[in-house]
Length: 340
Image 1 (spheres, rainbow, N blue to C red):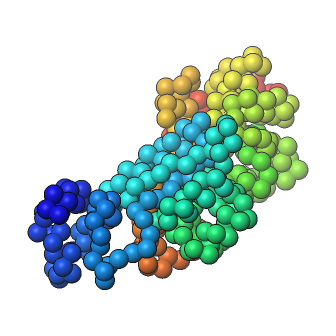
Image 2: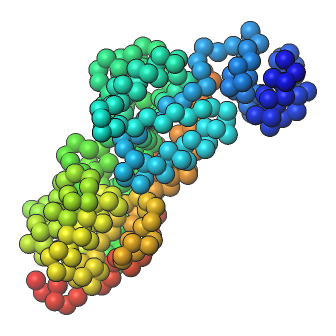
Image 3: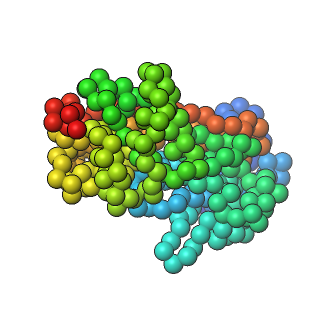
């Protein structure tokens, strides 16, 4: 038992005396310290004191759509690090090409009496009706990050897509752009809907009729090729700048513009969304709206831990402001393009 206590103390970052005080239910131990020790007991396989026993394991599922979009690994890393610091063990669950889906992962997680789940870019609703009901019935602590659809009864947070688009529009208009395109995800995709709302509000506030700006909007999939294919239709509208729903789409727009013989940014300015890895070193370095990944991950883990510990978390959406990072993919429109 002494060696186990040493392991628990080392994992929790405290002394063995503190561990014994927690085991004995002694007063005078700060609540965050007590929680670290209890989680360390779970991880090391030491039974908690009966009065402090909990039903759930220290495992936490991180359900992510894929690892191709760089923003998802960024969230996974930020969430995993914060969970580890609080004594939880993150399990990465991502769809695979051979057919492993969210539904498969949820069934496996439930079999492990999972402590909680964080969904990034998707939600339990994507996993299927049966799995969603199982999560509800067992009251598994859940937090949704940048959820793709409506989930009003669950704690969730997201980047403020509406504010991000308005930031990008102000930046481009100040540079002299008057016809600005928007390339976003499919209809019904919630973050894309918020971006479209910001786009609409911007032009309506400036007296531009809906039938003028609506042709400047393209809905497509989140991929390089989808972005590249969206360019041709926008160019027929005389667009001189494009705001994209992701950095991946933005890189696709750059590729498509070059296929059309246009230079970026001299003949087409491009703004992305996420500020994912390597956007500062692509050609040209991408102007983009940065998601506050660290702050969002911290908030998500806090929300989840509060639920795991039995505290009430108010359902609803918390929005986090983005930051426009200006790089070399945007500039003033050329006279030739303005006359198109």
